[in-house]
Length: 635
Image 1 (tube, rainbow, N blue to C red):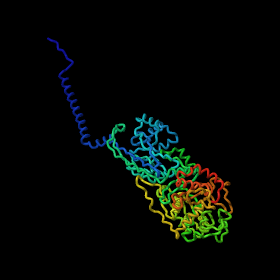
Image 2 (image 1 turned 60 degrees about the horizontal axis):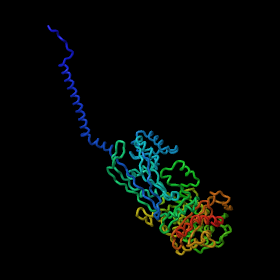
Image 3 (image 1 turned 30 degrees about the horizontal axis):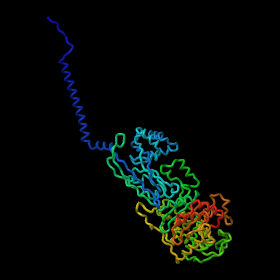
Image 4 (image 1 turned 135 degrees about the vertical axis):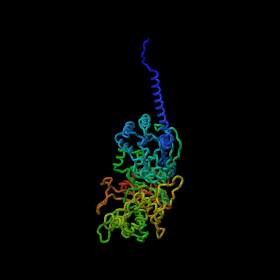
C-alpha cells in the first residue's frame, strides 16, 4: 500500500485569495480614479470661473505707468527744470514674506549710514494703497544696483525700476522761484487721485512746481504683463500709454535771474524785477539760496539740519515772505495819495527846520538831515527824501485815508497770480491795531507810517508790484510767473486786479516821475552817484528800514552796531520813464542806506535789461559799489 504525502501549498486556495485581492485592488483603483476624475471635473467644470480667475491673477499683473513730468523753461527757451533717467528702489509690502528681515538685508546690501536707516525704515512702512510700490530710495548707484541684482532671489517684492528724476541745472539761483519736487508723503497720499498718481512717487512741494502740479504731472497709464512664478515679467499683454505733463514756459529770464543772484553776492536780501504793462516777473531772487536737487531724492539728516540751523535762513524765501519796513521807498506813493485826496498839489511847500512836531506835543520827529532842507515842494521832497514833508502829509491824510490809498497799490495783500506761499505783508489800520493789541491808534504812529516805518511791512514782491503800477500811471497788473502752459499763453490781464488809480490832472504823474528821476539825476538826489552815466531816463526812490528804533536824541552810527542790527537798504525803480519796460525792487539786509548799496544793484538790473550786451558785468558793479560805500549820504 502506497504511503500518503502531505503538501505545503494549496493552489486552489491561493488562487481564490489572489482573485479576491486583485478584485479589491481593482475596486480601490476604480474608486480612487473616480474620486480623482470627479474632483478634476468639479474643479474644471463646476468651479471653472473661480480658479480660472485665480490663475489669471497669478499669471497676469497690471502695472501703473507714471507720466513724464513736464519740463520748465525760461522766457527764452532755456531749460530750468529737466528730467534725468535714474533707478529707484521700490517695495510692495503685500509680496514680502518678512518685512523686517528684508529691510535688514537691504540696509546691509546698500551700506546705508546710521542716520539714514531710520528714514529708510519709515518709508518702507509709510501708508500705501494695496499692491502699490513704496519708494525706498532714489538715484541708486551702479554698485548698489549690481548688489541688488545678485541678491534678487532673496528679495521678493523688491524691485529696481527705471524712472525719470527731476533735476535743476541752476538749483541755488532758481530754488526759491521754481521750488522743488519731493517724495509723496502719507498726508498727501490721502488727497491725491489714486488713478492719476498710480506709480508716481514725486509731487511738487514748493514754488512753481507746487502751484502748477496739475499741469506738470500729466495722467498715469497702465500695462498688463504676464509674469512667472517669481514675479518676473515674461511679456506685455496690453498697454494704455501715460499722458505726459505739459511743459511750462516762465516769464523769468535766466540771465537776469543769475545777475541778480551774483549782485547780492551771498548777502541776505532779495531782488524782484517785473515788466510793468504785463506783470511778467523777470527775476525773483532770494539769497542765500540752497541746492534744491537735494530735496528731490531726499535730503540727508545732517544736510537738512545744517540748512535749518543756518543763521542766514537759506530756506526762507525773502522775495515773497520777507517782511521789511518799506522806509522812504513809499514816499512817491504817499505823494500820489496826497494828490488824490486833494491834501497837496505838486507845488505845495513846507518849511523844514529838520523836524516835525504834532500840535501840543513836545516830541520832535526828525528829518534824516538834522538841520533840515528848508523850503521843500513835492518834487524836491522825493529827490532829497525829506521826512518832514511826509510827516506833515501823513498827519493831514490820517491813517484811514493812508490805509485806503496804499491798499490800492497792493500793500497789505497778496498781489501775484501764481506765486505759491506769498505773504500778505502788513498795511496797518485802526481796526488792525484794535484787533491785534486791543489799543487805539495814536497820531505819532501815523507819522511813522508816513515815512515807511512803524507797523508797516512789505515784501520785495509787493514793492516791485507797486512800483510797476506807479510806472503804469496807476494801472495795476497782477504779477505772474507763467508765460505759457504747453502752447497756450497765459493771459496778461488776469482777473481780480485792483482798480486803476485816477488823478485829477494826468500831468501830476509826470511831476511825481520828475521827483523820482531827480533822485538819480538831480544835484541833490540821494542816489545821484548811482545815476552817473545813465543812458536812459530812470525814476527811483531809496529807502532805509530801521531794524530797531532810536530814541529822540539818539543818532544812528552803523560802525558802533553789530552787523545784524544795522539798517536794511532798499531801492525801487523803473525805466525808461517815458515807456517803462522794467520795474525793480531791491532789499539788502543790514547794508545801511538804500541810496548806495541797493541803488547800484537796481541800476545794474535796469542796465542789463535795457542795454543788454552793453550793460556792465556783476563784478564791475561790485567794484563801483565798494568805492561808493564809504560815501553814504541820505536815505
